[in-house]
Length: 436
Ligand SMILES: [Ca+2]
Ligand SMILES: [Ca+2]
Image (cartoon, rainbow, N blue to C red):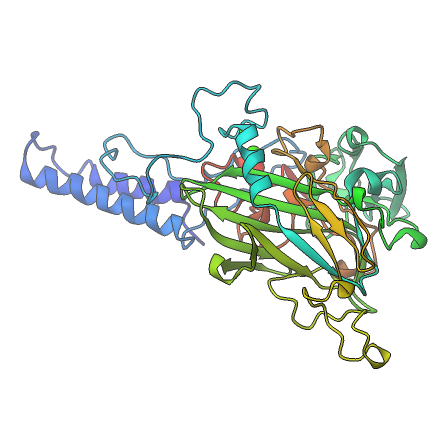
């Protein structure tokens, strides 16, 4: 069993101020040594925590609990008297986009950063994305998907293994407003479409797969919206998360499912300089910025057809349009426009197709926090699945950005949503409630 951070700090404190240790007058050298040792011990605990080698235990939610539950603090609370400890963050101001005098109008997602400044950074580092000319599952956006799907619930603990359609073509407001009573041993608990995350994809809200004829997504470029979340990070800069939605994931015969979210992070330091690009394909993959191809300051990413995994290089991405015999040996090549579709994701960017047609891109939209969405993007608080339930875990839909499955922390925290977030609210880091 791991000791919680709070327990360790208490242990340190108790050892330092043990009632068996006689109190010493101020200025006493032994007392100074004890105080010094206390600070050293506390710093060691803080360092271990920040290194990830000390993770607070997750407290089980009581039955029926669906509201945000108090969690162990993501960062240690300094003890009075330990304030002489140096700032563990290796940077000093300026803090990017940070303004203590911000009004709610300027910081509607309440992360301490000016929303306009966050948008400017997101536009500046918005990626250029290449799809192969042999792609057949194109991007969509949230409202496109919702208007062709239906909100439903699955609860195998009910009689007859409940699978029930609740709201056809839900709006974003309807998507996050559903509440249904749980069956079985959880009877009396309310499952919430904006709150309850299912561990095993059993007792869960889900969005039905779109009909087969629509699984190729949208070929209308104005539908290819890119969603952004920005937040203050632990190196005094801003982390930019970019997320995109596809109607369907087709990997192979066995690993197909509806509703796929693909994302990555751009980590900026306190001088607005990018340090890392973190891919979120099947795992959390930080990449040094030096390895990222750039167009001006913008990262360039390549999409593997069907699975939509993101790559830093176009290696082994097959394509059409090379003019080779039977298309043999044809791969996506930036220098050969017939092998790809090039999308500038920033607002006012363009999309150029392999046949030369060009049209405006859909641009970026900030989603804000799941507790304080921006720009009407309420979907970000939806905690159910984005595709139907299949026979297996991997053939069922997956979660959206704020409840994403990649690299989930041992204590249940959502890594893909909260990595490096300085002072992350516990209600953002953890699901609000969990079901089987
Ligand atoms: Ca903000
Ligand atoms: Ca933000």
